[in-house]
Image 1: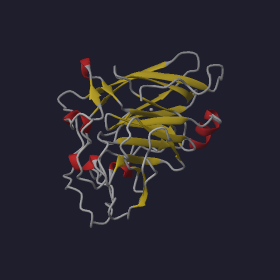
Image 2: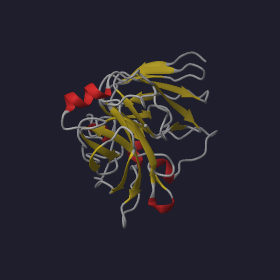
Image 3: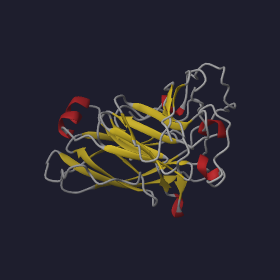
Image 4: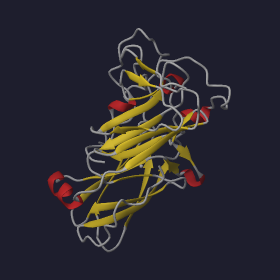
Length: 289
């Protein structure tokens, strides 16, 4: 199959989100926690924060509206894939004990200069996102500026993924990965337009390479947190309000914390209008970066 490239006008491919989902948790900030890029345990300037994130008592899991899952397309999924499910629109999942997976954990500090000096240079990473069963996987990726997003597909169908509000679409072909440099902080949604939809992945890009994403049991390990100074740990997702814990991390003993977070108020979202201008607000407009 030949490569299919088309330029899709920004107005036709505008991102449809859920308005001002979530609050912006500050400036700083992964799928179940990945192993640290380097072993920094011997660095006396760095420590570890471990913990768990739970859904607040009485709260229910929020979901994206159907319109937020599509990049201006109303085409059906290919017949080879299972039909859309409500679960597809609920990227944060709850387990026993109200624990939450796919919540982004980040660290910042009042003294940003000292914080960044203590963190030091961290090698850039590559984060994989794959279209499997016509759905982008994982639903949430956390990364630092300078990292790379690697898109692949398990289908011969020519999905047209875009990231953020890019007006350029290029078919993602089987066996031909696409790499995108994450050069700016922020939250960008990866979706597919024009042809069939492929769900959604929220890519949270932060400036400080100190981040994690909660696992299925709600747990996280935040490695490389500057020790011996006041730091702020954030728990966040575009569908949730920010959770914040302030502490001072020791080098020798991991710090333990627990978050209880609440869904953000979700405004109504209309179906995509190809003639409408790009929305001013989207989940991509807020975030811990």
